[in-house]
Amino acid sequence: MKNFCIITNSYKDQDYRLTNQMKSFIGLKGGSCQVIREGEEIPESAEGIFVLGGDGTLIRTAAVASRKDIPLIGVNLGHLGYLCELEEHNVCLAIEEMMKGNYIVEERMMLSSDPILRTALNDIVICRKGALQLVELTVSVNGEFLNTFRADGIIVATPTGSTGYSMSAGGPIIDPKACMILITPINAHDLNAKSIVISAEDEVTIELKGRQPHKDERVDVNFDGEYALELKPGDSIDICASKQKTKIIKLSKISFFEILRRKMQGY
Image (cartoon, rainbow, N blue to C red):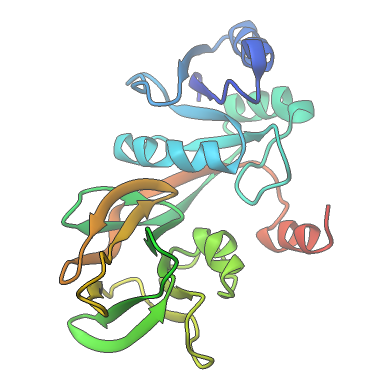
């Protein structure tokens, strides 16, 4: 791997200090590197992508990188995350190892949906909007009715996303290399409402039911934290595993479980 692209969160690497250091180092070692801003087109020549910022920056980059089938690795410039393996102090060593071919590529499943053609590495969240009232969401799996949740919303997450919003809503933590879909209600008005884990081969349909016709009941659908569309009573969205996968470069032998342990211990 000799040709790289760097995507930088300019709020976390102000004046592109680290970005420019990395670009210079790659050139010094005989490689090539292009620096782009978030949202810009990834060059076709890129064999690997460095994402500077944090887990959020990496997640936003994942959709574009997966479409081009280019692996990426995160450089953490914020708090300890689950996805960004590198820190500023070891990034030059990482560049050398990648250029020598001393790395593996880990595939992570993503979600896609109908009617909107977008993908999500972490989660697709259906949440209420407007007045502070519960919404009624009917969930079906492969066309078979599962449950109706009266809640603030529902999170449909990948194993990678199990350590995000779903975990905050009481969902289980899943090894990110696994292939399954996690359904977690948000503040359900039911003491027995629990997260449900289904096969990655299943398709989830979520429909907004109208509880009070005289009120303006609507929900927003967000892909990895970004607004995608609005549902009104009677509208539904189908969610399934995407054919695209996010490829993450791994250099360290530190396991997901060690990262998890460090997070749980507060550092």
